[in-house]
Length: 115
Image 1: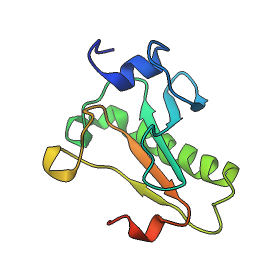
Image 2: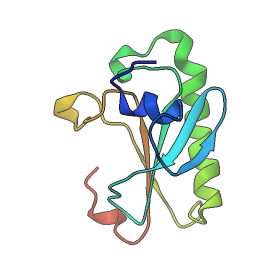
Image 3: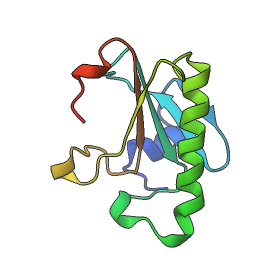
Image 4: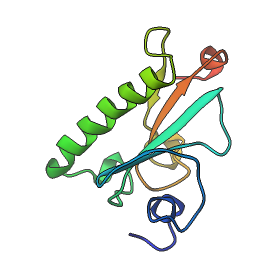
């Protein structure tokens, strides 16, 4: 855990968030500033700064993040109507919190989000 990382603090229960799912490997919570009606962030509990810092040993974890995103989308009732998954990488790629996170976007404003 990095003490100055807000996502690490959320994972550890030291910062508030509306947790949608949590286990030993990952945590999913609602974005505090949603861009769409459904905007959930999925993060590995282990601090990984970005996709650029992913190691071969993290591959299975990243796969499970995607599978969990699909499961959450189904629980939110949008699996069949559609949703978007997005990973921003680096400041130039739109990453503002440097803890790898997968965005799950869904809802009526989805098409206004640029891919």
